[in-house]
Amino acid sequence: MKIFFVSILTSLITLAAFAQQQPVVINLWPNGAPTSNGLTGDEQNLEGGRVANVTNPTLTVYPAKNGNGMAIIACPGGAYIRLAMQHEGHDMAAWFNTQGITYAVLKYRMPNGHHEVPLADAQQAIKLIRQHANEWGVDPNKVGIMGSSAGGHVASTAATHFTSDKDRPNFQVLFYPVITMDDKFGVSLLGKNPSAEMIKKYSNELQVTTQTPPAFILCSADDHTVPCDNSIRYFQALTAGKIPASLHIYPTGMHGWGFKDSFIYKREWTEELEKWLREINKQ
Image (cartoon, rainbow, N blue to C red; front, side, top):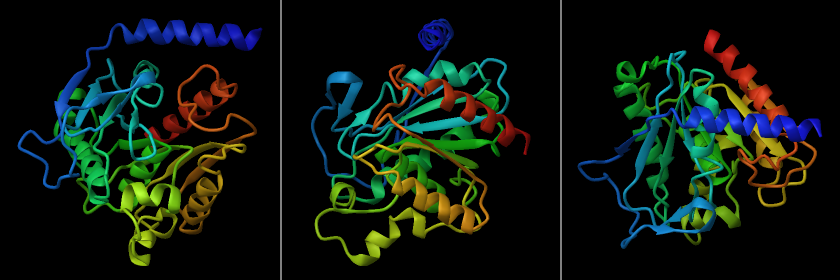
C-alpha cells in the first residue's frame, strides 16, 4: 500500500511539473545529415508511443527552471528498428527538470545497416546542447548522455567513440543497455555478416579508455532480452580502467521498464540515480 501511494504521489508531482515545461524541438540536421540511413517515406507512429522509419531526427529539449547546470540527452530504445519515445524518453522530462537538470530526448535515425548513423545523431545532439548552453543555463562541462536498451548502446557508443571534447559526454546513464554486439542486435546495426573488426569496434566494453566518462548502469537480473551480462562486462571494463562506475542490478523487472510505475524498484532507482547525479554535479 505504501508503495502504491508513493507511486501515485510521484505521478502527480511529475504531471504537475510536466505541465509547466516549454519544450523546444530542434531539427538535428537542418541542412541535411552528412550520412543517410537509406530509409524513405513517412515516419511511422506505432502503439505505445513508439516511432519507426525516422528520416528527420530531432532533439526535444526541456530546459530546467533554475537549472543546476546539468543537461542529459536521452536515447530511447527499440532494438535499432524503432524508438520507445515515451517511457524511455519524454515521460522522464519533469522528473529531471525538478532536479534542475535540462533534459532532452533524441529522436535518432535507425541504422538500417548504416552503422555510423545513430552515433552521428548522438554526437550532433551533444554539440547542439553545448551550442545552446548559455540559452538554457547549461554548463558545457556537465552534459551527459543516457540510453535504454539499444539506446543504451547508442549512449555507450557516444561515450567510447567521441572524436573531440565537442562531442564527448561528461557522464553516461545506461538502462539495461546493449553493450556487446551479437547476432540479435548486430544485424540491425551492422548488417548481415559484419567483419570481426566491426563487431569489435561496436562492442563497447572493448572500447573503454582513460577518457571514457563516469557511468551509472541499471538492469534487471531476469532480463532475457538484453542479459545483464552486457552491463556487467561494461562495468568491469570501466573499473579496470579506473573509470568511476555504479552498477545496480535489481532482482526482477525483466526488460524495458524505463519510467513505468509498474517497475517495483522505481523508487530505488530514482533515489539512487538522483543521488549519483548530485555527486557528479559537485565534481
